[in-house]
Length: 354
Image 1 (cartoon, rainbow, N blue to C red):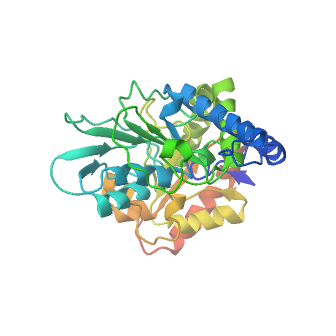
Image 2 (cartoon, rainbow, N blue to C red):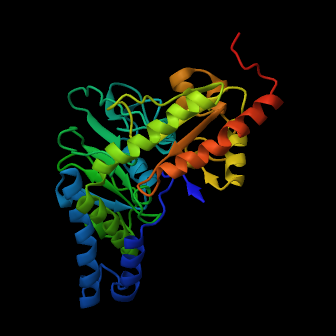
Image 3 (cartoon, helix red, strand yellow):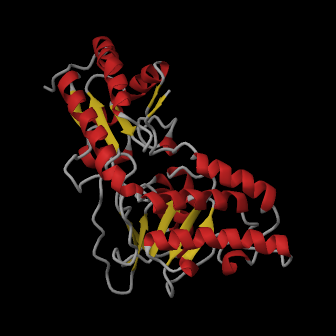
């Protein structure tokens, strides 16, 4: 299998698997308990908190563990329930829907703009925030791929998820700058200084920590900027040269997009069909956000960028990880041109726009 869907979920790292197995045996106790096994478990949780704080230039006490990015996004939005919330049209569904349901009218009190878009990889500029308002950014895709400094970005809140960096699913974090408004989403417990109730997912948090430690030790963003960017760019060049009707939705200009995401549209060929044909060849890609799988509507991200439903419906996202090689690119290009050609031959959509 050739896995090119890292933006959806990265395979669990061997180091993470080892750390979690050890945790199941040694740190199984409730981390909130006062006895020694509880303290040992809490020490491991605090180790992960310190690692994330170091990686993003925050204070450990500004980190709250959650079940993932969706919970983190919802927590921030619910903190400003009834207030005007300004977001970009490229945001993740968990933020857009929450803002629609819980946002109010008036002057914006919260601005929420992701740093990196999950479908096309675009690196976005943070907005100008009015005095008295606050800034949140979903950094789920950025973590480990590019350097992050929440202070330099002037963020009040930031969202993270472990499974995007080779950690386990069901674990995430929320950065909350000291002194900013905060309303717990999960209540009924004293965990996380009463900011997020519920028994700690100690094993998952330890797995998150192992993934963070690997990022810090190896400075993985440097490899993404060199090795992985080259793979992405070569694949893009070959698709444009070898597949008629192809066009890029990702800007390859250095600094314009994440180095591991490539979104491509293939005129007169449906994205879901391309995905399934590639899957049959053992090549795993996606048509956009995995969170929106099964939604027959065109990608809201590509509709916002292009306004063209055909472009959105015919798109494929290739997303690389550190285990991918140039042989994977070659494997894609051995089968992709024929797959697209076969679908284009069956399509009623003309190859050239009128």
